[in-house]
Image 1 (cartoon, rainbow, N blue to C red):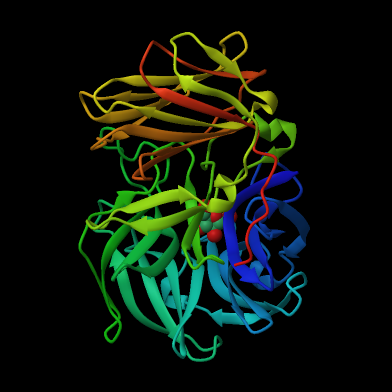
Image 2 (cartoon, helix red, strand yellow):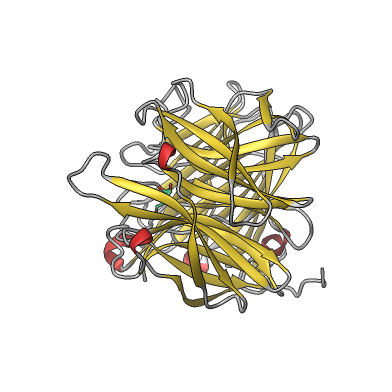
Length: 445
Ligand code: FRU
């Protein structure tokens, strides 16, 4: 119950994945004063709630224990987070510092102190992501500069996790990429480096940047000696649905880079709020890179192997509708890349509908959840067949196209039982699996 936003402190500690999140235990209607909520899982599929990990109980975090990350060494989990302090009526009206907290049981945490004060980077100076390379710790931080009109990412280094020195500005907005870069992450992949972040303030351009804020990445080269990052590609959105923000990545138990995001968006008022809980995480997704430097996303294999009851398998007939139990399931579609296709997910009575369609002539895919601003669309031109997998949960839809080249993640709140069908006769092969409750045991990593 309550309010949840960004994933925080994603890590592996002993045999568990730990995932923390921005949490307001008091209300589901407002973000309130952020705490760190806490859950753990052995398989990224079945999660267990743990007590609140961090409360806003110090002068330096009294207005919010903001986002951050975790680093595990031996039996100690170190958490780096942003302490937010508001100064109502003053200018600037808040300040932010980076704090270290530690745990030696993965459940209870002791705050140590402010490790980066950052007086020259106030007031928007937040969301530390920390990692270790050889004998050095690194941290990226989101920041705004030029009077809060431009966003950027700062790189810090430390030998002891306590004393930090700023090394470089990894990249910065020139005006076209917004006024603040939140939740940065920086990691190597296939010989390149990926700078992932959530910029605020990018103007919509056609089908791009339609959400209030974006989440995306820039691929480039990193010079470890000079700490300079040279982009070789423009900023790209990581997901093309309505609700995808504040990403965080880790290396999982299978040695793969996995990303998770908050599947919601600031300023959206979804009907779950009045019901008592706001916010959801996406399915964790493994990341790979294509030869031309684009990220591919796949649901982690723990989710893929969570097999349910097969409800339907065969050629899709226009008008056929298959009912989902518990409003959750997975649909797989194989179709010709030279034929239009559309899948309709609707509630009884047809009042709430999501349509996912492929337009072969223009090489585009669209997700339309109806209502105001219901459409999200992006380019997608499969070279051979058109293939997509749709994960439907009782209040969300995540679509993976092709080999994960394009994903669309959106919240959806159907009133009543759902059916899945195809709009018109097509030669598509459709397989529908119900509610993925039964998990198969995983081999030991
Ligand atoms: C991103 C964000 C972070 C901040 C947190 C506060 O959604 O604004 O920059 O740390 O949420 O809850």
